Length: 191
Length: 367
Image (cartoon, rainbow over all chains, first blue to last red; front, side, top):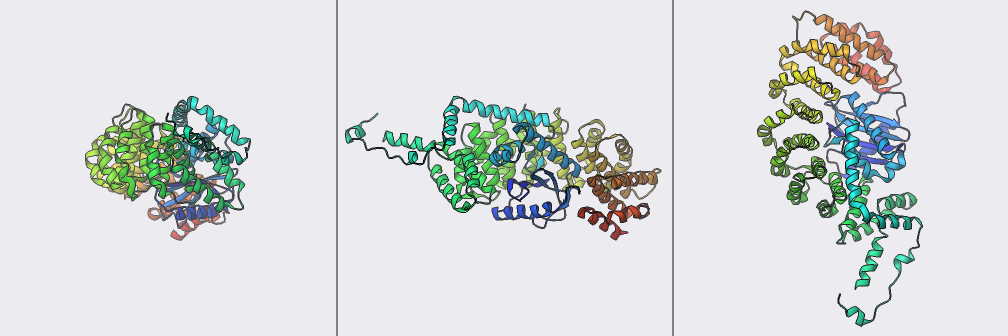
């Protein structure tokens, strides 16, 4: 079973946190911090397995991680999982992200962590490996993206216009604009 | 009145979405806590609106803030509202938020039973999929008991995607509501022979987890697994089965004797390191459980130790680590075979990798 999946950058900032056991938010932050400390002090040419930290618990747990450029992908697993298998799975996860985001980089994870979660949900469910075949995973993601597009449809046009407007940085005044009070007679009109 | 509504809609268009929130936080590094506090206020405002799109946007932002360490359980009821949307896009946001912040003792879980049941029976496999995935993160004893039959029914869905998820979900149900196991087990067993390889793999996964806790009860499945092992080419599934056999052989040495040959064949034929390693591990487990009387006993031990030496000598640190890990299992019952390689292990004590030094030390301590 997988107990947690953590993605954080070279400074320890969390980019994705998925816990398959309940921990309070404070505990979760501590776990991320401790995991970062354990993993970041390792050279790049040592093995990818770390006997688990004290927080995430217990001698049956290992940290299996991969370091890609500015990001660490860490899976905390128990002895029912194959170490090399999980290492492969991390690779599948990252390659899937690469296909979905077209040459994925940290910024993609920063701004679209929700999409990353949806992708991860096609690989791991409730701490158990769901699917390891990339073709199958990508098909499922594509299907759901289509559903999203269909629902957005024509109603997405205003949303896109709004995004464009936001990017123009229209001053706050428009939001604070006070509309004049209408004469009572008009206010009383019922439509 | 109408103008107020127009102004309201106008304001809504300037609500921050997730991207805006993330950008805003990055642009306010100096006063992050204060900025986020303001965003929280905005979110609370948005959650008071009737419009589900607006609420969903707020929940999406809250999910992000949860990752930064903020407790969002106060918005539980709103999360459930968003989960109940009839739009996939919005529903998905709700289910994700639930999986990140609900837990099995959350009181509001009982409000979700009927909604989840409805979702599980949806015509749209992705909606049912959303519910299953989310539920697997926080299922409680009550939910397990109430939904166990619905999930069991999904094992017969025409969609392999659903069958696969339902199979894994059953394991979570068993954990919270053990009474469900006995009646469900025959159905689960059938899935070991499901035509879809993904579903088969999921079933193997679940049975392996169950067997880890209670190996005795699953010995009877050994023939089924044996057949799967000799016919499947799915490495993930093979690994799970072979690990399972490793756990079963102490209970049934005759099983072990039957396994030596196919496992040895796999060791010689597979190109997947992950599979090779697990085969070696299980052969070791078999040889440990069989005290003697096997003609090729010594030869098999030698083969394993030989293969492990190759792993330990490899420049790949991962293989080195795993080789040392497996050696320590042989040490207990066949110390002489391992002694022969003391030189190699001593070398590993000097390795720059702390994990490797730890394994080497562990081994030497046992010698």
